[in-house]
Length: 285
Figure: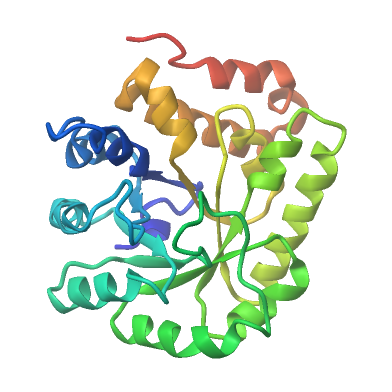
């Protein structure tokens, strides 16, 4: 069962555990445990786990990729999403895992350079089409869904479909940066337009990068058809204070608040309601 089937009426939450690995890598003690973090998030209701293994292994290491794949075999209704640049080490992971029958269910192609600090832009078409098409086709032949990390440009969505992608992941840092500023509403409109263009092209819509408890409800309320959000940095930072379980539940509450606001906008879309939803589990249980 894929993640969209697991949660047909709401946006799924995939937890990126890269930052857990980053903390672990500062010592040689094996703590905090990446697999334990993933397990606790899944037990709390997260619908998936995401990793972005970079070639320098500055956070997720090769062993983590396979240990998490083994863990996910016990969670057959959840999704394992591996993201990265397919011209680096990503395809080796996909080929080996798929060959062993260990997934992943989804791969997200991200156009990062090897020394890039963090993801900061999406693919461009037609420039990237020729090199992406055969790699997308290979992943699909291996039974892996392909999502492309994309800027919110409506005109690019049909090209993403034409190259063979199943979904796009909208790069949301510009939206997060505009949160609380006069540009917030305009940014939301831009993402809504891009998502609608993706839906019109027959693509699924994911989103991720700097989404947090402040801005998540409004995003899922205003942007149509978001199947999945992948959240790492903010969620793991919150978990340092709240714990994994309470943090996952708090992010789920933000998603629920966004969907509730769609149905009863006059009552539930108020800032007071959304602030209340954000505050759920704000103190340690």
